[in-house]
Structures are given as C-alpha cells and as structure tokens.
Image (tube, rainbow, N blue to C red; front, side):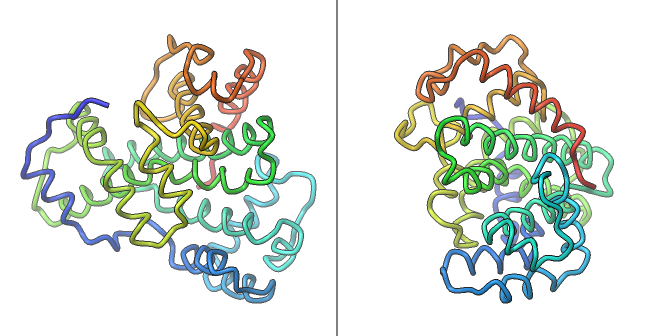
Amino acid sequence: MATAVIPETVRKLLASQPIELPIFHPVAIKLQRMLSDYDFTVDEVAHVAIEDQSLATQMLKMANSPMYMGRTKVATIKEAVIRLGAQQVINLAIAASQAAIHSSQNEALNRYMKQLWLHSHGSALGARWLAHGCGMRGVADETYLAALLHDVGKLYLLKAIERLVDAGVISSLFDEELISDIFEAMHVEQGYRLMLHWNFPAMYCDVVRDHHLEQWDVVNKMLTIVRFVNLACRRVGLGLKHDPALELIATKEAEVLDLSSFQIAELEALLEESREAVFE
C-alpha cells in the first residue's frame, strides 16, 4: 500500500487523540475480556450484557434477524447465551454497539460513518459465511468478529476528526481526497493501536494490522478470509470504495482459499443482501 501524503500537523493531531474515544462500548469490552480470560458462567455473561438495556435490546433484535441467526428465536439475553454461546453474544454486543457509534451530528462525517458501517457489517456477515464454506466452521464466529473490526482504525480517525472539529481545532477536513489519504496513511496503525490498548486477542490484532499487506501469512486463513471479503466489498461497492472491474477469482486470496466462481458469486449476493440488514 502506497504511503499517502497528509499534512504532518493533521497526522499529529489525529494520532494524539485520547485512545478512549467512543469506539468500543464498555459492556462489549467487559464481555470480550470475560471470554478472553475463559472465566465466566452463563449467568455472569447475561448479567454483564444487560447492564445497558438499550444495548441488550439491540442485541436481541440482531439475534432474531434472518441475517444473523434466523432459525431460533430468543427472548432474553440469558437464553441467547445458552442457545448461541458466549462468543455469539459478544459478537452481538460489539456489533450492536458499533452500529450505534457509527454516527455523527456532522453531516459530512456522518456520511462516511454510515458507509463505513455498511462495509464493516457486510464484511462480518460475509466472512462468517465464507469461513463455513472454507471448512472453518469452528472459528466462524471469531472470523465474523475479526472482519467486523478490521477497519476500526477508520472509525477512530473519524471520531478524532469529529472531536477536533467540534473543539474548533481543525476545520474543512471533508475533502474526499484528503479523507481518503488520512485513511490510507493512518487507519491500520491506529486500528492496531486500539486493539492492543483494549487487550483483544492476538488473532484479531493480527487481522487489523495485516489486512492490507502485500505479503501476508497465507497460513492464517482467518486473515485471508477477511482480506478476500474486504476485496469483495470493494467490487460490489459496499463501503467507501467501488471497483466493479476487480477480478476476485484472480486474486491471491481466492487462490489461497481455493474459491470457485460459484462461491464468489454467492458471497457477492450475500453482501448485496446485507445492505438491507443494517441496524440503526
């Protein structure tokens, strides 16, 4: 990836923002840490999940949607933990909180945030589906979360810009080319910084760090899936970039995953469908 040119003052201002910017919901972070420590009970997970009632409501809405679970309806968070498992509940908590955070009172920034959420949400659904198709059913939920968070650095940068604009420190940063340059130059390093700060497991940090590398660890199938779905989103225009001429079957990721044209077409259809399954 080429190094974008952005004003050094802008880079320093953005990079120096407090890492506690509203990127992850406290409840979602608590749940993630519980799972990472392998020290929890069903009741404990449910108790933490309902600390924020609006978040719990949103989680249940997602849990009962066709694009997420579909087959079994759940009425309570505890029932969701029992039926779906702790990892699924954590995924729902992070997804629900991320959906709410991808918004801004600033009209220009809000447009970027909504497109970014379309991309992150679609990537997560596509990555979980592809993990199943690639024989990685056992880590499909983890692959979902890795894809959901792969561009978290972009959200951090948008929130940092929002804070600086509100404080009157910077202005007129909404030129599309400049925003694109900021993302290209900084979103990977800032996303990786965030993931390390919040003590996410290494498998998620690695995806955030390496999803744009020209040379990557092809043995890491989770990373390869996220990379491929990211490219598929670009081809169908799900997010901030659209490249309909991109030949997915010719990519190194498709070769590593041994994907067929039929699988790719199914994935593209799922990504298109995900546009209608966004939760506000």
